[in-house]
Image 1: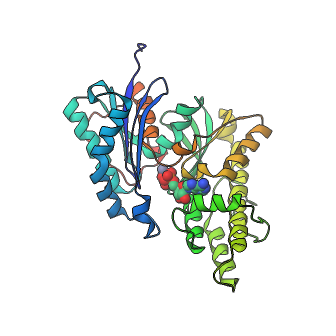
Image 2: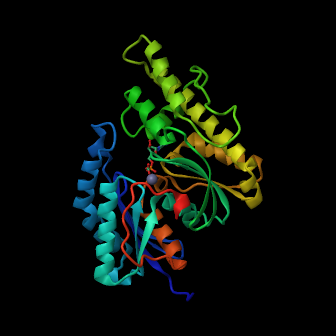
Image 3: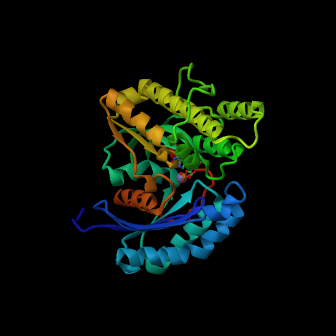
Length: 347
Ligand code: KG4
Ligand code: ZN
């Protein structure tokens, strides 16, 4: 490959962020625009797919123009166009994907169909230059999985949630407490106020069992039961802070228990990954980051987590995954149908 930098324009629209970024093969984020729809969904307590798709249509062109302008480039300077083709809310995915197809056809630029989860999975290679193989905790609003990442497009599923995702657990518990949407950041902030994590005895589902799967529905049910038993309304700040601290501690314990088990999995042992990686929206969580960093240090492993703004959905991770796939020649050669479900193991 020549020394010329490759520029990739990446488009993300699978949930409630319309985001476009220009990233180059020297691992520089040349521009990064994130238009978040969170305020539009907040009054409904979660993302409304129809509203999301419409909002993506309204802003995608403008966000794309601004990403090019911020990078100081024209569309002609771009070498490859990448967009999320799934998994996600299908209306939104279609908006971004069809925009990318149109741009590619109008300019003759190659196109990469990026799996959104691969975007989350590879972003630590953009920011930390993390080498393969690595053991990844991918925790977001839609997914909670432990993956052995052997290479681009080469994922082995080691464990996953049997019910809710970690992000959903944060969002639902926050909703029960009347803390609004999204729940993760609010709960995280409450815990930092210094709640008592021992006050509520949340279960640690599956932690006494072998294997690497997660279950968060039991934690959620326990939350509902604790709340039903509390007679005082409105809930006091002390109650809420203790509740958040106790809930978050249960999630952290589950994560660490499952990650330890994952390292004992024969497939993981054989691959001998040297780095523990956390990615996805829940990777923003202060306690989860700290616990995984500590675990890595104790095991003499490296630890990598994307900076906070690259944990939640963003165009830079899609541009980077597009670039890595492009460098391996994995470009679109025919029609691609956007997919609401698209497991990483089916790449
Ligand atoms: O990756 P993401 O932006 O969207 C999906 O692909 O799902 O993840 C969003 C999820 C939400 O459930 C949100 O509550 C959670 O990430 N989240 C957090 C934190 N910040 C965002 N969860 C725990 N702690 C946080 N600080
Ligand atoms: Zn995501």
